[in-house]
Amino acid sequence: MQLSSLVYLLSAVLVTVSQDVSITAVERAFRAANIPTDLNIVFQPTALLEVSLPQASGPPIRLHAGIQVPRNDTAGPPSFNVVGNVGRGPFVVATVDPDAPTPQDPTEAQIRHFLGGNFLNEGGKLVNSTPAISEFLQPTPPAGSDAHRYIFLLFDQSPQFATQTLVNSSTSIASFNISQFATAVNLGNPIAGTFMLVAPPSS
Ligand SMILES: *[C@@H]1O[C@H](CO)[C@@H](O)[C@H](O)[C@H]1NC(C)=O
Ligand SMILES: *[C@@H]1O[C@H](CO)[C@@H](O)[C@H](O)[C@H]1NC(C)=O
Ligand SMILES: *[C@@H]1O[C@H](CO)[C@@H](O)[C@H](O)[C@H]1NC(C)=O
Image 1 (spheres, helix red, strand yellow):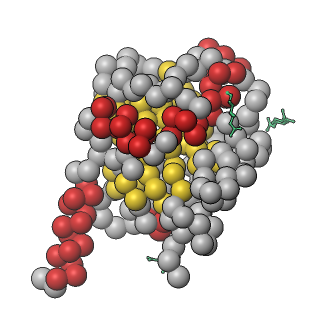
Image 2 (spheres, helix red, strand yellow):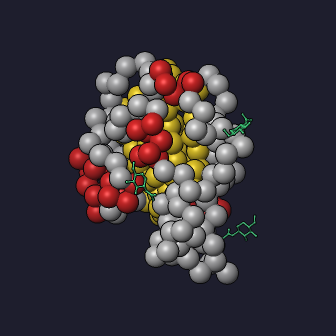
């Protein structure tokens, strides 16, 4: 076996087993990345949200909080699992980028990269029975930008979510505000989350 394929194999194995395993570690990573402050959220998770990005070849990439993922590996769409005693749902999953166009000057933030409801907990797998409001949009940090944070949050779904008219599939994905949205539709605080860093492809 060539060294390059050995390295590839090893990194694939490492990536495969690297999902979040500790709620405390996730909370710490969110704080270290200043996410609760930047998103205006209270983040005291009671469960783990597992996010898997399918790959053209090889196993999916499973996120752990703060992992840097090459942009080309983020096409998705991601699949979601929950670990913890959270009941059957329904749940809402939201993904936002608070760093657009750059972390230093996020004038377009937040970008809504995913917003979907009616996820049910099927033995840990989160299965949505309806189309998402915003289907997953691959990260596209602009050339020259530092890496952006792409933050996945899991909420218990409120009755108000089903009848909300704030956001639909034709609403601009820019200038979204997850804390404002969560307050408006009574989602409460997120019960789980994780995040990845994605930089523009190096040219
Ligand atoms: C990423 O994908 C683009 C287009 O699919 C390709 O041109 C480029 O070579 C890829 N870069 C890497 C580092 O794989
Ligand atoms: C989306 O919401 C806007 C603003 O409330 C509304 O004008 C538009 O008709 C809605 N579009 C769809 C597809 O529901
Ligand atoms: C989002 O909304 C909250 C209120 O829920 C507000 O405090 C905060 O400044 C808003 N963030 C942005 C980036 O506009």
